[in-house]
Length: 412
Picture 1 (cartoon, helix red, strand yellow):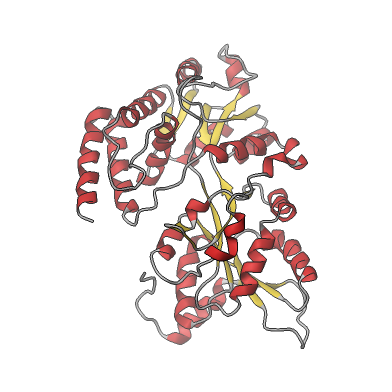
Picture 2 (picture 1 turned 120 degrees about the vertical axis):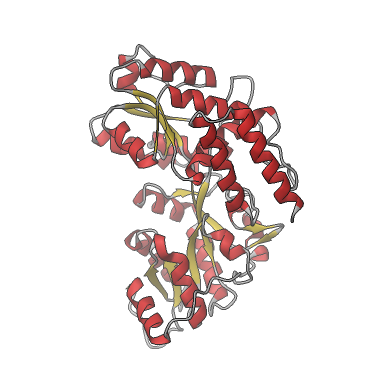
């Protein structure tokens, strides 16, 4: 894995690294203590501090130093740290950042150290290569169906519940779209990533997929991918195709009836005076398929060149304990626990949106673990846009994408 950029002057590089981070020490260091365990985190540091303080209290002699790691420059900062030999002992990475690191040999192999947690946590797809485990799933997220009860009532729909099947979803979108100035359903467009994420959950919910289990053969020629793309086209015709931030603004303004989004959008809509609801993404029918969405999340990792790998693993295991995972979720709205048992806790019984999100995470899927996924995702995004823009039928666009993927598989 090559993450290092063209070599700058060392003094300038170290100055940049120092300016990127905000240093927060959880407790004053005493002279007799060992060197601190460096923990770089992208969640708000103040939300993590109380949890780390409890870890220090339960682990005498271990001191943790937190550094704030910006979301948008994490890989650049870590590449510089790798080059300078000053890597953290524990670090938070997103699912999108993991493939770049998994492609190399920089991450510590935690297979033996976390094997007992395999049945307790979800999200292992984010940090595994084959049977080897290079991290610990910390928090997860999956978009759900967010809808506006007030618009449902105006359209003559049952505002007490969301659509539960594809037919109900299409019918509700069409009814909502007839309201003046209202789009029935929002389809996220823009980048290939957004387009693919708008389409794949419908493929998965129809029991389809892009690849066979071994990721070595295409399944695009099967009925499910085309049926999912036709559904997406029907929803766009009864709604609005736009970048995600535009869709969310339209929803908050009361101009959009439904979209697939993070459940936190419902909280924002309620503060804006709307009457939002959240529900699972509808499957094709009550007898066929399952509710699915696109899952992602944050992973705790250590590095082969880290100085305190044993303490880092101990801290990671502490962070995913039930009470600590719940404390983070209470402080950070999007930090849903990776724990399988999270929805059984009393805290979530008071949080309807959180409970729906946890149930959605349980049935959701992750990006295919292929090194060439960005290339394939780009081609799929082109095919989806060709259909949504009316330049090709779903069958024709996917047939072209299938030919490309087959050629890619054959060239490995």
